[in-house]
Length: 342
Image (tube, rainbow, N blue to C red; front, top):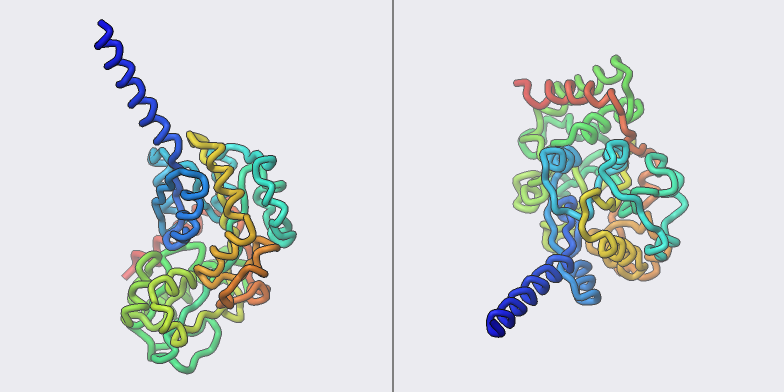
């Protein structure tokens, strides 16, 4: 009987150890290329935990996967329009700011623009930025910093636009001087016509995930997208052949946030991670990884070693994407027509 008891105790001990290992793992669901390995490694080493990261290419992909029943994630990183949607649907836990003292470094500009979550009850800002246009300057030495670059027939077959309806429709709306959140049928029709008849014939495809690799390989010379997706794929010694610009007409901008999912099993560890990210020297490392400006954390700039590829001033003509509510269905319908028409 005693041997059985010892065996039983041993099994219980192993079960407890296995449970502890699980508790010491933080699960992130973040955008592709958006979680620097060096930052993750520092967090793991300092806190004696493991971090697992899955990635997605668009808000729609992330949202659909969670609605379909994906579970086990602790922190997700939605843009402001989807942060708003997911707050309304009760998908997040409230943030205990007492456990995030580094929140004091979050900029007033971000606080002002974050109307989707006043007081940040459910979200911690991660990054405020914008997509733009990335050009291979060795292949395309002369260009205008405008969305009109996608009308250039001499670049047909060498360009891509994102497979992201809010970004692409927002770009075209801004190109015509309209709000990126417009629900005006006439304005949306004009924007859709430009994409369908002026831009789409010149692109290889709508691509939200692989354009960085295609740009790095030389297949694409001009891509619409996020700077980090290209700079992560192109060797640093070749960066002098890349130009990133925010078109003069402006376009959509975003605030991506860290949010704790309702079914998270590691709430305190998630808060620890959020506080860690906003440690100024860590946030500087995050910005340096992608040549980002320090648009969210006011104390990080002095620790940065890399010159950003764009600045907060470059976003002056850009506009935050709002939660469109029922109007999102209109955008979906327009986008389906654009994406799947011949």
